[in-house]
Length: 237
Ligand code: SAM
Image (cartoon, rainbow, N blue to C red; front, side, top):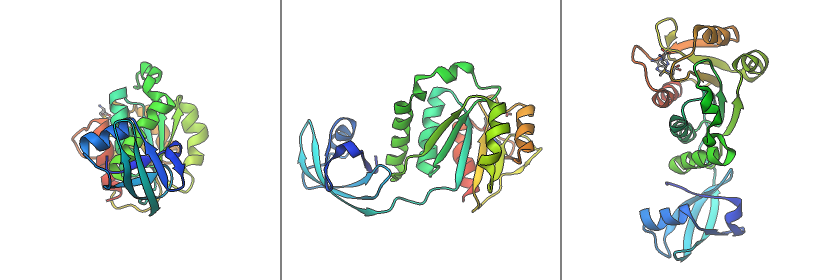
């Protein structure tokens, strides 16, 4: 945790917060902080700054906070992620959040296992936990928006064209039929990433018909959770 993320419910006044639970344990066990220490803090979807510990015991920590800094710049990127297995989903959400992605569409595709859509990790509070871990890791406060698109065809035909308006669409698909991943982009990108078994040809063709370009990362096929940071790092190097 490189930033103590403050929820609205933590504030007892404009400049004072009371923290308990996981964040208190982290500050005492990992940071081994004491009264008088200064921690980096940030308000969810708000400013960042410093918090000075006034009270610290096994039940609570009271901090006086000064919030003046804006959070880091977000990436001009929407990720369309074919729903991966829960373990990979959690890591992928944390990574995307830590890297500054602010819009994530969890979508269905042919090779997404149907049971993944029943996962308890898709509950709003469970998704939020992963996003918060990503923000704490990267020192950011702006929570990404996560939406579900459980049917590929109606999504791509009916809603994706509007989402793509004014943006460049890229579909990551292994093989040598596309171009190598472009670099140092500054425009708004919508990036589609396939499931563990990959997109089927029909899906790549549907995305291309919508205006997406096929891109690849060379001959090595990466796990979804690794393909995500590699693609983002190259696109926005
Ligand atoms: N056997 C599958 C295939 O050939 O499509 C492998 C899928 S890969 C494990 C999961 C997703 O990660 C892919 O659909 C793609 O979006 C992305 N990916 C992984 N390695 C890639 C590469 N070398 N080039 C482009 N995309 C890649």
